Image (cartoon, rainbow, N blue to C red; front, side):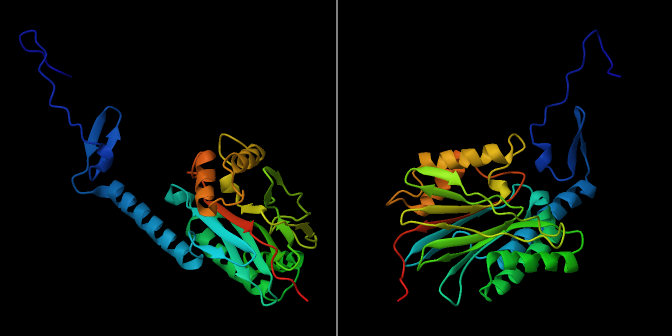
Length: 298
């Protein structure tokens, strides 16, 4: 109760305009602020959350290739954008790969393990390294996903994941690919964009015995192929279909893939055009710009 002296209400104490979120041990309760002079559990939780994010990001950096690096080849240019989720609790198991194979083809892949945090990243590491190792056999993308699905079912209980992977052959410019419950790539060509028709393939870890079908598309000089995880196109305010349409519109309006376009700058413009990074999920985008005819086998 507030007392009254001589009919006048006493002056309130000076306002403290400091942000309680940055005051050690302070937390708002209704209209009041409670100060925990000893630091207390709130400070410990903030420290643990910050440390978990540092460890998680460090682990991702140790596992994945450098996300800002570009690969320049005689027949194509490859660039990647990986943007982690804004919150530590939302960091997930997105991954990507672009590696030359012994026979001269290029292996391309992106994937996403269900869940968030360190467990998802640990499982992502197993799947990424397994798929990359399997790719060196030269087997078809469908067989690679069949083997990877067996690994998930037998070694990673209660885990599911999606992936798309394929081979780009510079001699024929043929991109042969398969997918496991993952969004299909987008092809940008001559000022237009379309999503490729996806061959049949179930989510990794869902069931056994179902084949992973294979599709192919012949790329042309000047084409741009975009492989991505659902964090790029999905938001709470829109579904994946609307997000894919937005990406295709943005790819065309920003001139991404046009002759002479800076691929790295174009990817940055594309991310800005769709609203920036996703605060709720990781974003991974792998772009392949076909720059020439490529080597021809005799």
